[in-house]
Length: 355
Length: 256
Image (cartoon, rainbow over all chains, first blue to last red; front, side):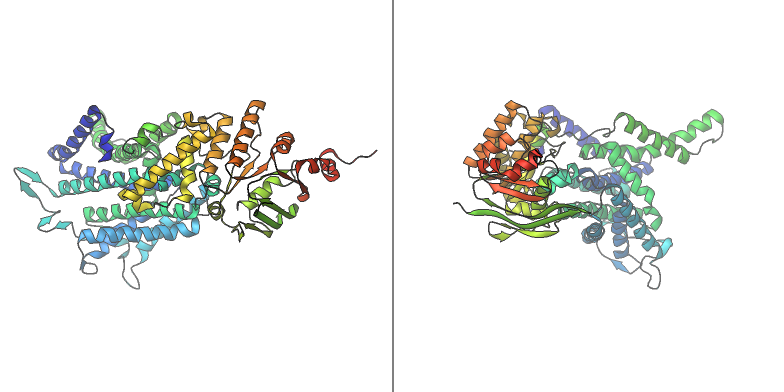
């Protein structure tokens, strides 16, 4: 990989250690409880979603408040093609690209009529789109039962590669590979691919055009960028990533219903992008990891602490979670308005790995 | 006489009840520096914005290199070979100077998403060419040492130069400069003048809007004067300077 070329021995060692930690992580977590492996898997899903949204919001500067719609589309495509609902059981490696393509199409359908809008107006329309998709999922149970309405779709197939079933546990050389651990490695692989794609896009003709539109749309037009097409491309790319993440979500949960795709989720993903640092891939990843783990950490600490101190539960962890969440965002915007780890565009990052 | 590069016919533009441009026709010849002057509010920048497709027009057409220009899409205008700068500098502030110029190459390059993701040999070659050309252009306008600085951190004069470099990156046939000397001191203006003369030597046609009449008269081959949205003169500088209508527009009617 050309990313490695520009690194000194210390950076390489660091990267190696991070890789080793990521590989060992699920086993360490499993020793605490399998629930933590699941939590980690969902965190990785949110990282994927944030990276997808980062293309739209971070690179191209288009505020999208309905991003979860593409996640929903991907999830439902997987659910419909791999569950007893229609009696279809396509393999996951066929469905994930289909899900990405359908989500991409949804992105274009949303983008084409709305991209004349800017800023707040675009945000309002995308917010509406997100809700429309969810309401469709909720109501497309009659006259033809397409989505099974609010009851959702159950018994969705797990990933299966030959004899390897992702739902079952396998023991290899004394190590127990539980279902979630297998998914973890798969997700990590997908994440790696998505990071590479993001980095390459960022540092390309198209990536520069996105940033140019974000910086000054009129000037971008004047230098010959077809702003409509390039913005549409950002929407389509972001949506595709959302679709893939959605497919994996469906397989991971084995159950989808419209209530997983509410506005709150869109806002959460947006908060991850903004908190981490719009436009900077590593910042966005950090933001997503932080915000996905924080509620779980609170859940596991606040209850025992309260019980120990007061002997009873005074504040529900769920309430506290939103409080801390809000406080964290306010503090970030006050002290680090560009995010925890903002985008820095300087030569070192730009030229390394490319000659 | 050299051939005609741009011919505008009967350009009209209204803003509500204000007729900003009234039936403006003008001809720019290949290789010349064509000046556009006029008092404040005469419609110079409006005409510019119509030429580059940023404002929809209410009438008229533009022929460029003999073909009709698609004035409804700015990117098609840039592709046809007209590049511009803005009166109030419009750079991509959070991109480096080099990147700003690289964006200018967009219209002459073609790598797409898949090329970028797969880093194909063609994409890498194109990317290298973009970078080399951008580097050359930064040298050409004389700010190569600022290549890695963010555009918004550049000094005012350097930002003007960067904007010209970005416009040149689109390989224009016609470079349209909207008040490039605005806010510049005498030294900077002299340097700018040298730069524009260099552009002409290199075969570029330049359309120049300028308030600095001295600069325009010294630099331009021909000058058009706009007043209240109408063209009142189009000639070589000495003739324009002697034109009574022009004197009236600038100095007012003699009441004596």
